[in-house]
Length: 207
Image 1 (cartoon, one colour):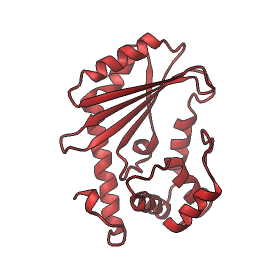
Image 2: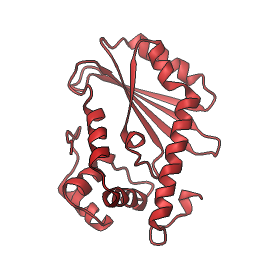
Image 3: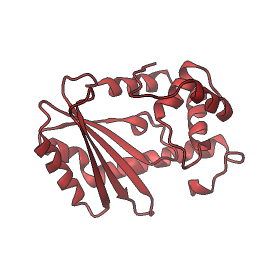
Image 4: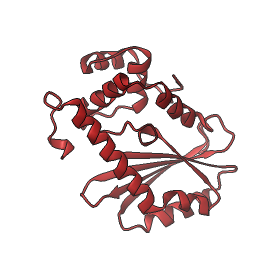
């Protein structure tokens, strides 16, 4: 079923659950197809899956998130890994942001993969300095979110993500904070919650 044709008012919970499971399978197929983890390891960098694929909360925004670590971060190694990934015929473009001189101590990579169904997936790979401030932080966040989810809160998060317009950019952690910490249950309440909790940088929250 095409998620683009599903309307929130008529989309039952089980349909959204099935969409999330389908997208999770697709994400794992892309990870295997690209060999992305082996590519990073081949240049001495440790990859760790984070984000909505790790938590199983992937609905409409088709993204795959990795944090990858080395100490030091060798820019040439980072570029070598991305050169290998870019050889894959489904990778259509690659973007790079060098933030090594910030508190995040990282290089941001964004690759765009066109799957066999014609859908574009964004693969985010953040190459982080091992031992720096955010080493392991988002892995712990994903683990805790998975641990504290109940069927009810999982269903609510999936529904809120599904009800979000395609052109609205919202960080996953915003949904998780609103639902798990503050008890938000409707999209209207979520929009009001976001006005009261604007994101100004890295959200350092773990449930």
